[in-house]
Image (tube, rainbow, N blue to C red; front, side, top):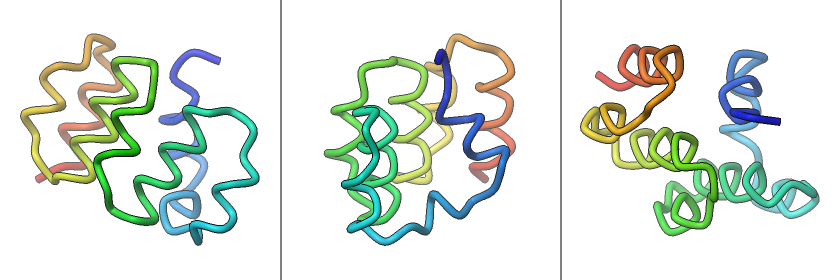
Amino acid sequence: MKHLIPLLLLLGYSLAFAQATNCYSIQDADRKNYCLAMSHRQASYCYSIHAGDDKNYCLAQVHSQRTYCYSIHQSDLKNQCLGLIK
């Protein structure tokens, strides 16, 4: 279950563009908050994500700031974040 959010992104970006109503049916709290953050483009949902690396990944995307990527400890996820955020 570790770093499930990036795995979902690798499967496609459909989650990121999901309607907020669909996000509420997601059982896993971190995945639900990530979905809500992407659909509303609001960082407040990112702060509800418990996994630190996933939280920083979410914040980097919502704010479009690479500085959050540098706080990610897992190297693959950090590199993915840096590649995504320009």
